[in-house]
Length: 343
Image 1 (cartoon, helix red, strand yellow):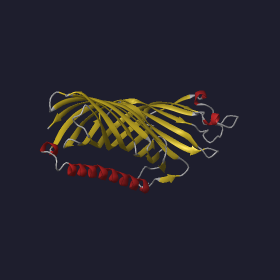
Image 2: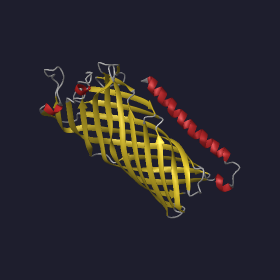
Image 3: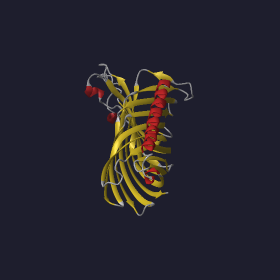
Image 4: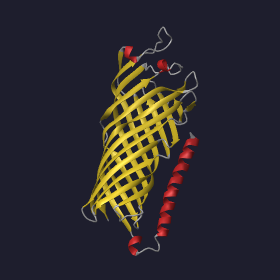
């Protein structure tokens, strides 16, 4: 765990150092430019974001052949989340832009369902048997908080052209808490059949659990490197399409199984495991006021990490679980509307 956190701090330090070093170089390069190239322009943009997607948890173990096999999967739906936030942007001369934002989701309602699946025949080398899902449950998915923030650096080589290519680098951070609760419908086949393996959940009797079944708390850090293509058909109108790869991701995931009094802490870190696509349109009413619409897709999948288990959830009570390892996935769609005021 300490090794993962140390690597996380090191990676973030390198990223931030690179961003600010690039900025320092930009200011130095612009020192002999005209006065208009030296000035710093600030803008503030309040925005609303509609968020729809799913975050997933996986548990992997080795099968009898020594290959990776999926034992468990949790799908936490994130439907119809509404974020309110603010973005700040600083333009240094005509080329370099630093952009940061922070937002909170409006809390206190159901965001879909939590789907819990188990494949207890995972160990079997017969893939047909290993693929039989023997346990399945559906719970209401409620969320308590969701905070998101980002920091990005852009370089615009041709700010006055009709079409240009803008490279960028940055980092996204988020922290959230969701619960699986309500009247949970369950189908459990936990007795082996005459053939020596677990039968499908579809042949099990339906049962129910009440109250909070699971609680998921996650902190995610995703770094990005990519480029935007910008088209300006008119002086006051621009369109852009962006694509970015995910050089490094870190996930701190705490999963509490309330009915069992068990806590699972998953620490995952992985290189180049996702991408982000974004399309944007901005209309400027004048030099100070503009309206921006944004649509983005994000996909990240990780299968490298370490699991720690506790029976109390207290600090210092977690022990490393060497019998399995965690995975995580994130698939989001976001649509935003922002008003920009330039100072």
